[in-house]
Image (cartoon, rainbow, N blue to C red; front, side, top):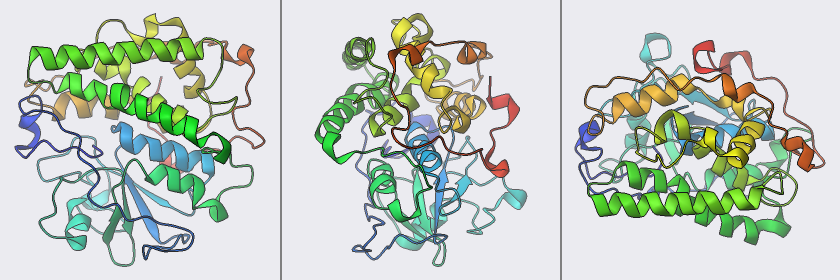
Amino acid sequence: MGGRDDGGGGNSAYGRKRFKRSRAHFADRITADGRDGWPVEAGRYRLVVSRACPWASRALVSRRLLGLEDALSLAVADPVQDDRSWRFTLDPDGRDPVLGIRYLSEAYDRRETDHPGGVSVPAVVDVPSGRLVTNDYQRITLDLATEWTALHREGAPDLYPRARRDEIDALMEDVFQDVNNGVYRAGFATGQEEYEAAYAALFRRLELLERRLEGQRYLVGDTITEADIRLFTTLVRFDAVYHGHFKCNRWKLAENRVLWAYVRDLYRTPGFGDTVDFDHIKRHYYQVHTGINPSGIVPVGPGLSGWTAPHHREELGGRPFGDGTPPGPVPAAEEVPARGRP
């Protein structure tokens, strides 16, 4: 996952060592002016994701909304990684067809041997050299929105509007600490007090967000922003994995009228739900975190039919894409298989 550092021990260490979310070790930026040596350039870079990972899913949503599919190619890793790293076993011969590698760790090693912090997604790899450019999960989507503008589709939304950035940043920091990261602090807690503190902070923040969203369709202003993307990728996983597997069980999202309607509104918005694979999500969490779920059994439920039920959030107004337009259809090669959808 993005920024995960469990101090070694592989998959069995989850839930047995104190949880720490490390900073991204490779924080180079791909910018319009190329100041870090990585200029924005169509076709040069490859985005490596797991559809299971909420941090990587941010980049999937952003790439779709901005229409960068042709400019930034996509590699999807197997949701069940082994102790070596994310694997390309979904591809023929178990190799990424563009990078020619079996493991994402190979791109990391080409950049720096014996690097700290593990092998995380999202990762952006330089195709010509096969070297990792960045795994800075906090920065990648902001740069897609602000540095890649020359390659955005016509009608792309402004996901990080300059006039609202202070408000967006403050909200995203609260959401990061208590929600995005909070579910992990609860799920990977090694002691009762640690778990209960994370649990309390998580639901306190969710209730504040519920109040905020009761009278407005989106988190900041009347359009979708980066803040909505970051909250969505945790909420969409909530009932499927965080409620049970991570013991975040005060209530299910489906029992919260406001947040359940909000996340379903986004799910039904082109660019959001069409990137979500519930099969990958459930198999990753329940099969990889053997320190928490030693049997590796993946629950059958919860059912997914509710995701397509009416949400009525459009009654609050709002303009999802601002002055822009929805993204076009999902490229055929990137469609989520039927078993991962409602």
